[in-house]
Amino acid sequence: MKKNKTETEQTIQNLMEIARQHFTEYGYANVTLEEIAQEANVTRGALYHHFKNKKGLFLAVFEVVQKEIGEHVEAAAAQSNNSWQQLINGCQAYLEGAVVSQNQRILLIDGPAILGWDTFRKMDEKYSMNSLREQLQFMQERELIKPISVEAMTHCLSGAMNEAVLWISDHSDQKDVIEEVMIVLKHMLVSFRNR
Image 1: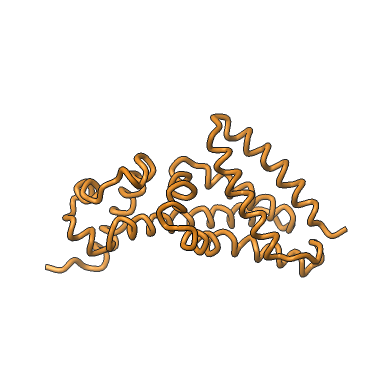
Image 2: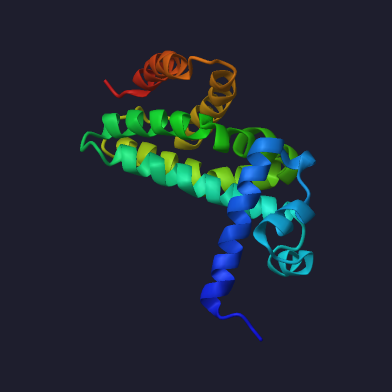
């Protein structure tokens, strides 16, 4: 008997939630699909039906993490009508979202290593960099930012934030370290301001 669409979606969702827990707790290398299938109460064949392999399952989980952080950034930015404050809110929301333990390993440790830099960068661009680029472009069109390369600004800020997340994650007092990073980011952003 075939499962209906709702049951299939629930099975996929359950597999991804369990996989996310396993990838977070044990890291990609130490996760087996057999354990995930067993915990989800499905056969290995059913898991392979929905995800070709472990890397395919990881990619799906990675995309969920990217999407959630992107939504968190958008919500934080929308809390202000001021373009500069939107940019600052978005940067801080990215740091806070990416450093969460359930996101950090998947997003910045295993993500690039397992998916490769090309896939990692495409996903990062889709869910994070595009929003940052759009905000910077919007601000530049209103002459709030100097007439310099938006692409270069986007890549420099994105790279700085990704590296900062790795640094923040090494500290137990993450809230204080995020504040330190935000002071530095604000100084960087001020240098882009059109006087």
